[in-house]
Image 1: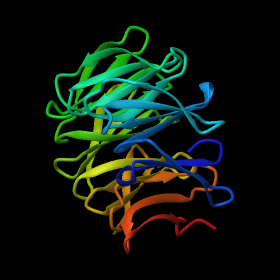
Image 2: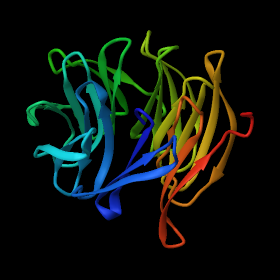
Image 3: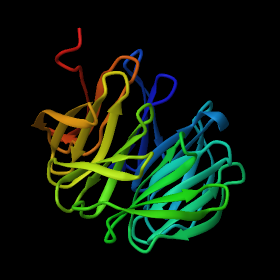
Length: 282
């Protein structure tokens, strides 16, 4: 969510949906994104990047005109994306290819592929360290990459987390939340020491995580439809509750309003964007 716009991957329709969160209205349904999965906006270069697994590529969109301006690949199964602003590089999780792919967003070219040794879960940029972090399936690791060299700096074990996939960051406290999709688990990781502090149980097959930095609240959505909510404080997470929502495996939070957005793939035969307000928010 950037500049009051929420960008949603409507995978089954091969569309990218643009929604204005301030006016609460649909801006556009953009065609040409086969089996779109991940979406990431780099406002520094006025670009949106979408991982189109059906085309084995990453598609670049000009956020001012909403026109497709380039494509980069081939990437076997592009999924999560991150952007390193100083190096102007896009890093892409290739879940089936076992690599993190690196793209030049200006020229829209594939620069290199970084072997991970296992399937690539989500990829995020840590603005504190300046590193790219990738969850690695099978090996159950969190891998740190130097975006200056496109080399792996180190590998950090996530004990008890099977097939780590989704990642969210608490930048202020320099923490990572990493979900294990194989055993409905969640890790709390101190990014200063790169040590795992604790683990928690979430819904089956957790996928996307969203963290509200103002409320210090974490939302974990699972492909099973379970959404688990935690409160962070005192170096630990406290469970606030959970609920079920059909197809709620994607979640986004607006840090300004604290509203939470759930794009639902199919509700009574139609895609629906459900907007929720935290119960304790006045």
